[in-house]
Length: 243
Image (tube, rainbow, N blue to C red; front, side, top):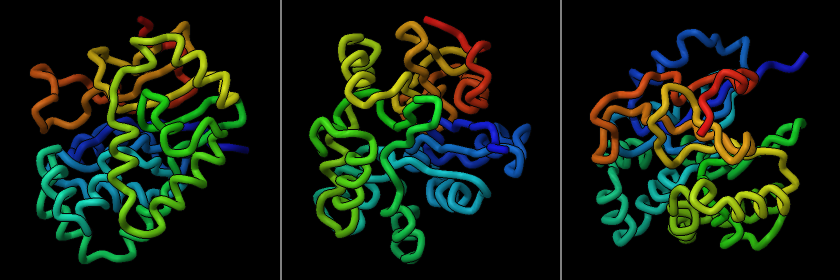
């Protein structure tokens, strides 16, 4: 019997709120999918990576901030870019000393397609095609894996995934993305929403799990959203807010 899917949106280094959000969901009872951007903005990004790695039945999808953190390890130019994007120096040094964690992070997929046709990915844009052409999720993952195999291309992933809100602002892009990837709906993070639960839009064909879980960073909301805005089982879609 397969486990229900638990989706975790952007954490941005707030390990304490991540623990709070996951408290109702024991790891042995759920398959947990982290949608990326566990790092930057808050003080415990590497701790969040280790937690995602070690939690049973879990998968981390690569976010643009993970890609830029890897770029900062080897490039002075990308280091400054990463710092300006919320990077924490101690996270970089901690990751530099932990080569097994580096290798694990370089092997994270960009997206995950479920049997019901749901496509999970970090960004709400089709910039993945800037990296891999108009390929399938499997071919996109292959190209991203090749780019991460050796240092030097991580910043290209950052560039492709960083634009926000494309699917909501341009519904035609969402239509084409679903059609060309063969997906029924897309589940993503990346662009903060203001609702108390994951935001469903595009007539139910897109779900946004970035509810501003992290308390840190210049783009977090003044009024902190509940953790249920970012962390929820995927089979509770009937209870999510719609816009």
